[in-house]
Image (cartoon, rainbow, N blue to C red; front, side, top):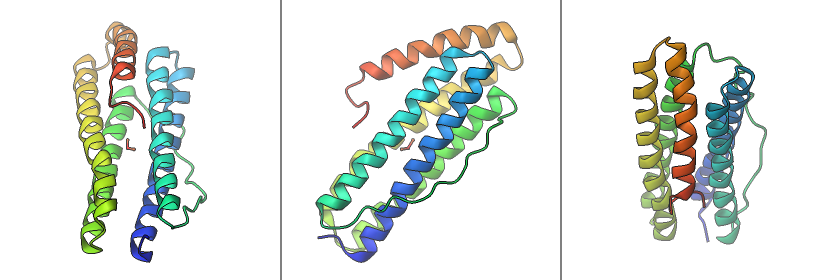
Length: 173
Ligand code: FEO
């Protein structure tokens, strides 16, 4: 059985993951109308992954005798300026998510809830991957700068990242 404190903290994370899904969906839509299909597909897929992170938490909270609460979401921004700025935001967003997961782990230890602590290790590992992926994409896009040809090639290459991460055994739930 989850303590009230642990349940509230997990419910906060449900919101964080749902908000993340919205943010990446908005980035996907922006990339799509800018004609960058590879980046759009990457973001659509990332948005789906965040929803799966949220669902995993919903099921866990209910399974442990809590009540997963579904709440309203913040409207994400709809314009991102440049692709570099957009990927900087993605990277910063993932760092915020990692901090939020770390805080949850901290709460689980305080509550001596070792089952939740164990459950959260999946998220800890996932955040290491997500931060590393976001950082490597950002490094590439910084190299490209304003070069349109470079962006065209990057848009093609990022589809390869999609295929590779889809094949990864750690992908999704
Ligand atoms: Fe669910 Fe990208 O963190």
